[in-house]
Length: 225
Image (cartoon, rainbow, N blue to C red; front, side):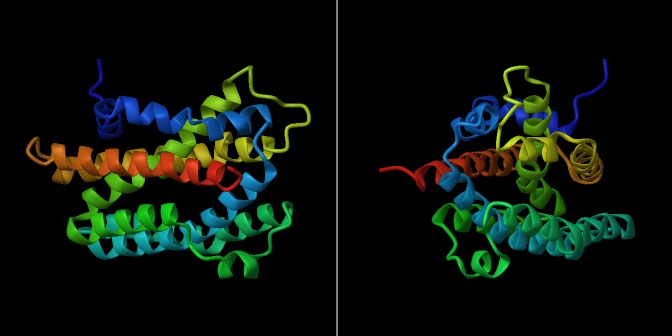
């Protein structure tokens, strides 16, 4: 039996929170196509703002790196976010009637502020492993969510307006991104992890997981009442 990855250990330690995040009602609405379009637009706008902070987090990862290989890995993700992912996000959102100028001018929701600032603070106060533990629920979690929804026969294919979102995160390109993020977390763990540090990493991972669930809730709350 192979030893569990660091990601698997962290996920197992917060199993209830992880399930609440990866099986959230927001995702069920994406899978069956029942999610209100206004909720999805609100989520996509806030996700655009989130990506800017996500890029900053990987800039911080470059600074926190201890080896050239770690610097290059973080810089590659940073470049991908700024030069590829944000452009794809803008193009995807355009199909939903959202333009970049409008999204950039939208105030950050409290859930966006709470999540992004927590991730950045985790990295600033700690080292690269702390930062990547806080980043993992997003980058690796989206891969798990996309993979599960793609494989689920209950996911609605015909006429589902959100199928392209599911295919984006369940597709081969993003699955490679998620797999590399998991491998990088393991590599950082091999250099820095001690059993004494594990509780703090679980705290970072668990808090970020709960903040991810709050991000889904933010989308649903946009159409509540």
